[in-house]
Length: 142
Image 1 (cartoon, helix red, strand yellow):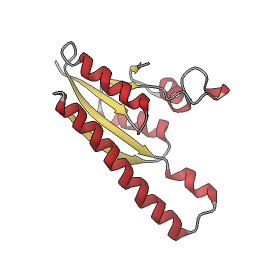
Image 2: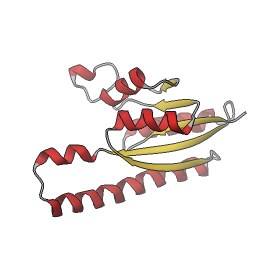
Image 3: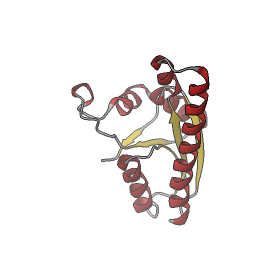
Image 4: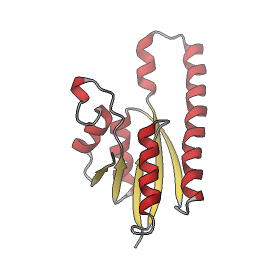
């Protein structure tokens, strides 16, 4: 039986840890992986950028995210783990929970970034929200 896993990724060491865990566990747990990268565009709106600036930043952000998620997909594929990619816009925690529910995945694998802020001391704000709001099992990878 193949387990369907949603893996939120970015360009961080935390995301790399998650991929390494998946590669390490591929023989024990056959998985099909959906790599999800979320671009939080709503945060840009509050910084007073002009429309042309927002469009340029948006295009650069999407291009960067596509490269990051594709690099992660290739790393998994090279290790023999089937993976697909998905890029979404919005609030990362909300999007992660929505995609997990709509895609019918079995687990969400996530590794906290550890921002160091007092309010995010345990995991990180996105990870905390995913753990609290996602109605599926969430595996935290440290």
